[in-house]
Image (tube, rainbow, N blue to C red; front, side):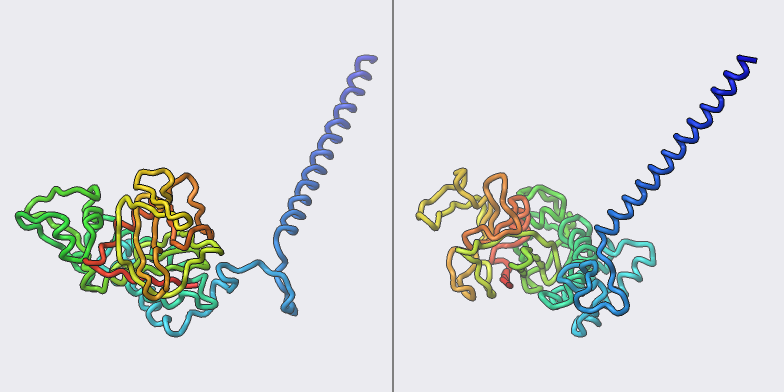
Length: 346
């Protein structure tokens, strides 16, 4: 009998202990859920109600503070809708538009739209969407891959059959290209000179299509590169410090130099190509003073571990990270082959 009583007491104690533990766990779970909900409410701005006025707080929209679905500008709407129609038609066929014969045409159409959106109120969200979802994959396929476009209806791309005795530099010059770009498009080292008669090369008819365009936006710290009217790539940049500002205006490239020397504008000292004090990096692309009223400016890379991108830090030049400066240098041709127009916008 005594053993039975002891067992009964132990069972009761176990039941009450389990119930106490379960209640504590449930309370802790509720408290955790309430805390998470409170934190989410604190971090998420309330949406304005039906009667909310101008002072109501809402989730900030992207880009320049305008909604992502803001109406597109009437002057580019027709071209945008045409491009989107072609893009969606190709997608519906199960093909990547960036790899089809329509890619050059699409790049031209979207490029025209993009240029119409620059610095226009309410269009920043669409601009960023075009760059990310349309123009970057198109530019990569057109100008950074071996993908051929022999049936390009825009007329920018062609196929060149190598003749006996031809070399990459001579072929590139014929079309207004740099040797480095020609070699990139055939998957070779920038300075490769090997060719075989009968080889077919992907070429860009840049000279026939007006050359290059560099659109530089100082407020948003980027440079857009166009090749023959088609977008190639967007690069983050830095530009002139407040005490040595980069001017605005339209000019052109007048030089393209590999392993340049640098003259310090503050003391006139000249630093050679391999001098660690030479801040230019490996390339220099010089601006004409025409249109900007200032000599000695251009585009370059940077010598050192921290190029301080997207900041006002230079002596007035446009600074890219060194690998990207070299890539841009290899894309552009010398001015005697194809002109490069430069737009410096506030």
